[in-house]
Image 1 (cartoon, one colour):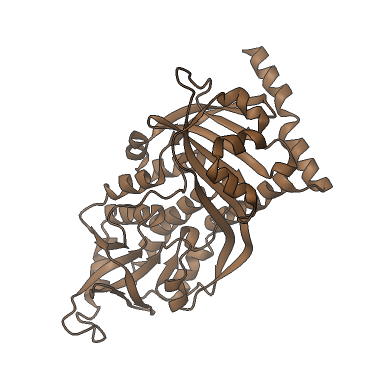
Image 2 (image 1 turned 90 degrees about the vertical axis):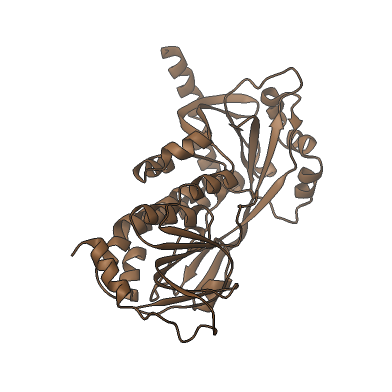
Length: 404
């Protein structure tokens, strides 16, 4: 039996009506109900829809708002998007750049080369949603209730509609309400681990920045700054600042009220690269806890992306981990699950035990811890990390330039 035939047979065996639904409320059947239409959910919906599955994608926003989240992608994410057939459309919506000047304490350390794309998070989501095929129905609504089981999942929407699905995918980010409804707990392992900031800048009138993109590292342990990324997104230069400061630190308020003065006072050598730059947008902040979920091997539901495990934005591992989740679920596990009846926890456990997923989760957690140690740890270990990270790079860069 083909995958499509197996799916159709399994769905045909499901009841046509849900006796628990409110009187008069419409009930529809789908293969997969995805809750959360951000990057994880929209990506999964496109991949599954293109494979022929009947998918309902549920999100409260018809147009995703301008939230500060990931704003560029490179490396593994580019490779994964290529495998999923989505690189071209996202690259076309983004701003490409292939060189990054790396600097610290007013001096160039080296230059990194490789493909990068700058794009605002809302535009990533908008571009992915534009790729949703006809087999995906996008529902602008909120989930009011959810019931899961070994065969059939029931999702009740605030608008009164009821969905019946073989599988529910929770891509709800840091939201806890739906997870808690089905007994999945979130354990915070490091509260307020980091705080990141996003804003746009422009060069002084009549001037231009002398770099395609810049990574400027914190100058001292006391400044608690990991690094500042400056890169092109459309007609502006976006700045992403990654720090390990507390949300209540007065410095945070100063940065939001007077970002240019605060930034240059904290990183004096930065003026060599940015000159008399101008602020082109307000400062947005993003406080991140490190967390993971527990009791997640349950009938009929899979949790992906930040809803499963959060990562430090400075580590740059969150999107690659999300991509690994979606790719492994949608191309490896789900097609096999749908060949047979049922959606018990023994099937669901296969996803969480996937060696590729587990390796990605470990790398993200390790990178999150490393970035904090590298930035603020004054112990011998932290000092050793900084020496290893920065000391060898300038001679190597000089040698590469000499050989050109």
